[in-house]
Amino acid sequence: MHGPVWTHLKGGNVTELLMSYRRLMDYFDDFDHLMPGHNEPWLAKELLPASLAGAEQVVSGQAEYREITDPWDRRLREYAFDQFSILTTR
Image 1 (tube, rainbow, N blue to C red):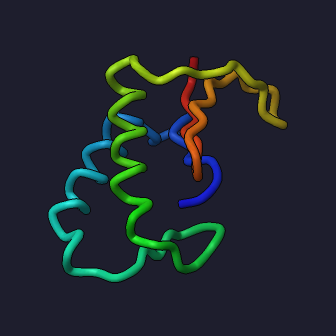
Image 2 (image 1 turned 180 degrees about the vertical axis):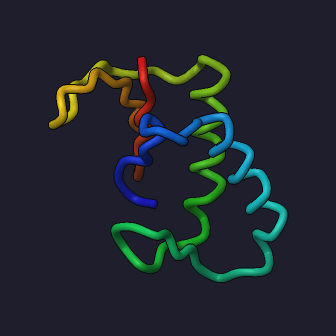
């Protein structure tokens, strides 16, 4: 999705997010658009490979991040990419 992907909340896990993106890529040719649960209702499906690549970089430790504090005073890491970002715990 466009905007931040929250993996820092209870039950969130960036490694599981990566596995979900990989599973979705198995069906990439079967759909025309992405329909995320938040923000914009229709996205170009080309965002999926970019999201997969970003998650792979985060999990492998290759992505750069900046430390931020959210409105609830939680310290997080924000990994910013072109059309989205991934938020994780520190």
